[in-house]
Amino acid sequence: MSEDNLALWNRVSKTNPANTKEVTFGRKFTAIDAYSQIMEATKEWGPYGSNWGIASIEHIFIPDMPMVIGKAMFMYPGGSFPVTSSFLYVSAKGKTDDEFAKKLETDMITKALSRLGFNADVFMGKFDDNRYVQEVTKEFAKMDTKPIDQGKVQRAFEFFKTKIDEDDIELNHEIMKASDKRLTNDEKSAVAKLLGDLGKAPGCNKKYTTLLREYMSYHPADNQDG
Image (cartoon, rainbow, N blue to C red):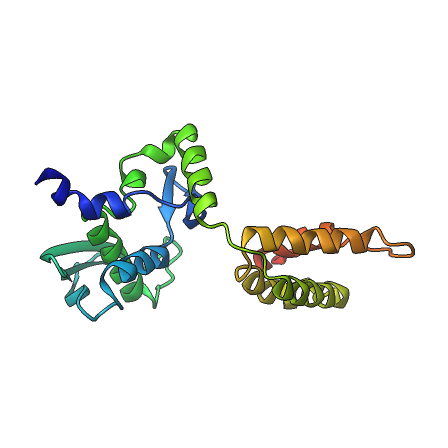
């Protein structure tokens, strides 16, 4: 009976480190990509809203304080339970966050799924152990191994080369980031090798791998206010 009760937990408790990021603002913690959680729940139960998800959301605004509390029911094929969350919808600088309702709902989804075991290793503090993170990274790398699509590699190579040649980093950054996410790790390596080989060609005055790295790490905010 115990193993049956843990069946869902055991299937969904491990987290792919690629779907996390370290947050160092304030206290340090590991944040999970909410849409990777929704995708895993979709694998288990079907599309969001079909027979699982947040329902009957109530927003309670705290008087004389820029805080809203969200109360809702989380439903899934095994049952339902209440879930709550709170959010400061005005920043310290006085700016109102007009997406607070969406963020509040996303936080409630994360909390509800965590109670069912989704990404439990993060919530149990296992991601504070570098050895554990290295182990699950290797584990998911083996699971994610797919044949390289040479046609996709060639198209990405030609696309990135064109964008780099245009030399407009601010305009092309988000476009390149979006394209990069469609590639597997092996395909990314293959594209980088092609760009690197191109950068070594006689008469070529651009090192494409270096420029590619700059494009992929660039953030528009880096160039604001001088």
